[in-house]
Length: 357
Image 1 (cartoon, rainbow, N blue to C red):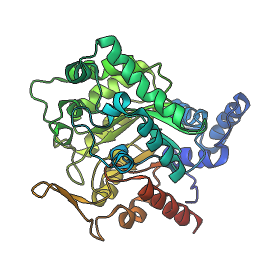
Image 2: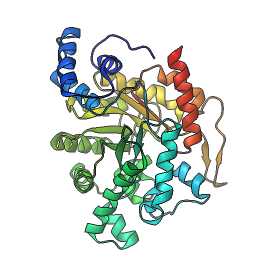
Image 3: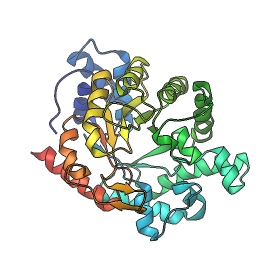
């Protein structure tokens, strides 16, 4: 994709084309001069966000993030994942397969991989595995370090921090139905996990599959107080609403208004490819200065009665929908459920072809 002139998000994308790659203090000074010349009205938050991205070594637009760990692990192990902790169980039970999955995604083209910590927290590790709080914290840290050890130094490692609903193991990450849970309670839940993994060595923290308006607000409060590099990714039930019915435009505006330099991207994951264009369009309008990200499911449909995946149709498959929403210029693109390394390689190849034309 040709870098376009503009302000905010477009300026960030253009600067990555101009300056991305090996970072140095001298380059930081040049970037600040460049931004001032390009658009002296840019806010300090936009410039700080850009510099954080460049410090991470972001040099490609788009940057490919990995696919669904569960899909690749089931392929590697030829067996279903444990039901108690999902991919996180393998941090304890089969770390070598987990590292192989990370490495496979890098070979497929990923420049950012996510840890197997999506469903992990101190409470469920204590409940399902009988771990002490200290051992549970160590397990979260180990998930990040396993990913770091499995990939080259120039590949970014993101610490996955799933929705509160993911910890309930009842599908609440798709509905945002959290009976009795307040916004302050959600803040405390996410703060507890972040405190455990903050020094684990992740390049960025990914708050993903977030289906709840109050949960988004709690995460933004935590991100601002903690001054971390992070992504926020929504789980949406349709083209305009989060799982709990909160309008995408409302939470996206919250992300913009929070003015958090470390909020490096906002978007959606674990959704049908058919809704991505609409969701990203809503985010783009409300967040003009924050890069976009998206990593939807493959487009296959789960048959709850037959307990099997049904093939995607031409209108809902990830590969067929990709050109539509990649035209919006997301900085980060990857896959979620049912996107293994083989499919990610096809995504990377298709994007490479599109950007050469």
